[in-house]
Length: 114
Length: 112
Image 1 (cartoon, rainbow over the protein chains, first blue to last red):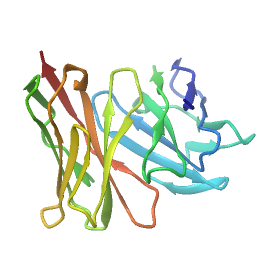
Image 2 (cartoon, each protein chain N blue to C red; image 1 turned 30 degrees about the vertical axis):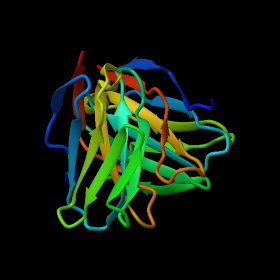
Image 3 (cartoon, rainbow over the protein chains, first blue to last red; image 1 turned 90 degrees about the vertical axis):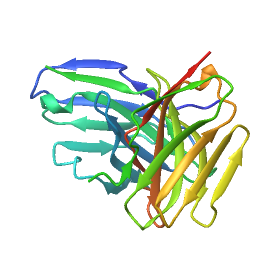
């Protein structure tokens, strides 16, 4: 069964460093997402991406964040200068043409900012 | 701005009994609702959805009920099984957007 894959599974970084989280969505899917979950809290929407551009973004997704789909398969989230509060599990998701809203999530990338 | 709320952080139910998970929303523009299940160290997986034109949707042991006037939805699991133990998130979206807002989750524990 096709799945969304994410790398790395865990990244530890120093505050102020740049981080890139990578995702390979399901190949025929059209919408791509990044969500994050701070430990024990809700799953928060960051950004949606469609047709090679940002479709919607939340107030969390400020100038420190960017997304890119550089080669038609990878979908990346870059955090330019990480802060302690960026420590979270970051989930990539994609939607196809099946059930509306049926997001297919990856297993997540845990980011720890020290 | 907590547009989707799950007021019970946890719930314990005996195997074979009914589990009822609740969710409230504040945004009257929401017209599509979903439930996701999440196991530790995994991403959420889709369970069941309901459109605002319906008040009930059933899929096997899972039934979602929607009360639009109360801005409330619930997920019923009957009968509950130990494998259902997970965190359950409700999510909502509005027509014309592909933005899905998740609640805080309810941890369900089904006791054998």
